[in-house]
Image (cartoon, rainbow, N blue to C red):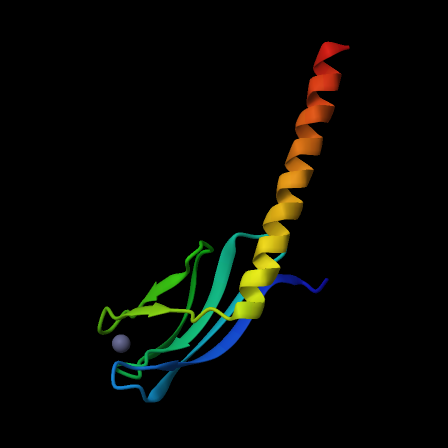
Length: 104
Ligand SMILES: [Zn+2]
């Protein structure tokens, strides 16, 4: 595992289908704040921003208010599903342990 729980670097097509924009997102392992660098595909305004990490992740361009979404990759969706499963398992285990601790 690296330092980041989520890393992406994508080109973004505008409404006309031209790849004019870019987005880079880094989310550190110990944080829920995403470090975002983007170039708006609609107006080519670029900016660095920090914003709360959420799914789906949408950045609104500060200049033209275009909604910039990260295109999902199939591979990522698979990984995410696996992660969700693992998270669920961990939660179940934790609940069991807590129950045990409470009853003693
Ligand atoms: Zn824009």
